[in-house]
Each structure stands twice: as C-alpha cells, then as structure tokens.
Length: 113
Length: 113
Image (cartoon, rainbow over all chains, first blue to last red; front, side, top):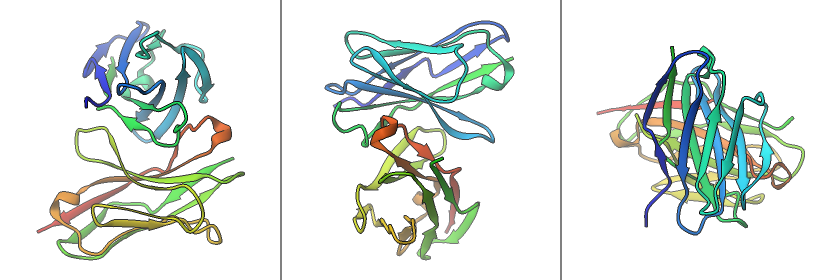
C-alpha cells in the first residue's frame, strides 16, 4: 500500500512569491494534516482538513492556506513568501476516526531567497 | 497551554548501550502520547504510541510507558544499534484540539560502532 506522498520534493522561491505544495494521503484516509519544521522552531501544526473542510488551524497568519479535494488530496498555499517561511513542510494523513494515528509523508523542502 | 518537554541532545552512545530519552508533558485533558523518529533526510515515522495511563507502547525494541502521575513518557531501548541514529520526537495529541500533534523539540541520537 502506498504511503503519503508529497510534491515537489524541493521548491525554491523568491520573497513575495507564492508557493503551492501538494499531498496525497494513504488510500482510505480522509484527514490531512500539515506541519512546518523550521530550523530552530521545531515541528509546528499548521492546518487540518477533513472531508473537504478546514477543521483546525495552528498559530500561523492567513497567508498560509490550503484546501482538500474530493479525492482527499490536499494543497498548502503560502502567499507573500517571507525568508522565515523556509522550512520542511510535512503532510500527514489519518482515518477519520483515528486522528491520533497520523502517518507522515517525506516532506517538501521550501527555500525562500 | 499544552506542551511537551524532552531532553536536549545530542545524545551519543556506543553500540549496545542502554538508551533513555526523557519526555514530560503538560496537558489540560487526557492526551495520547507518541514517539516519532526522523532518519536523516526523511519524514517522520511513528515509532510507538500510548493512548491512556499505564499503557506501554513498544516497537523495534523501543518502549515507553504512559505515566499519568509523573506526566512522563520516557523512551527506552536496552541495546542500541548504529541504525538507530536519528532524531526522536515526543508528541501529544488531544481530541479537543482536533488531534493536532504537539511536538517536543526533538533529541538527536548518534550511535557509534
């Protein structure tokens, strides 16, 4: 069974641009979570999507947004990129009733120059 | 707020040594507790979990027991291998927070031959 996949692996953007990151959950999983792993800040929860709706949000500004598609895949959009947005962005998925058991993808490394 | 504190690294051990990585938590409810491992250049893998007090999670020779009285979830392994070199993250999640994982800062482990 395929695990969580993320694309692209690496993304290089310039300050002020927009970045779009993609995630495909494990088959049968309806919940998708996004986390940011920035140097010195550790792993921080960004967003949770389930059944196409945003269910919970971490302490991040509105320029971090996303959506979940009918096939449960998800996009994370980061607008007006800032240098401190450089980080590894991890996506995780879970079954709708087992949110405490999340499986992670390999991540997208975003570099803002 | 809810938080996880784990011992600072890096931890350097010789092969076959005993490993303990301390983890304590603060939570307003009854969290589920986790240990995740991140190998170099990879995403997070769930190592073990415990969902209620006195539960013992175990996997690949690693163990941790959910101690409600001391709010702890220490990770142990009797005999480490070079292949265990990685960063280990303790985390908690609460149903009320939509299962967003709250991570400790991570402990880097290096096992030498």
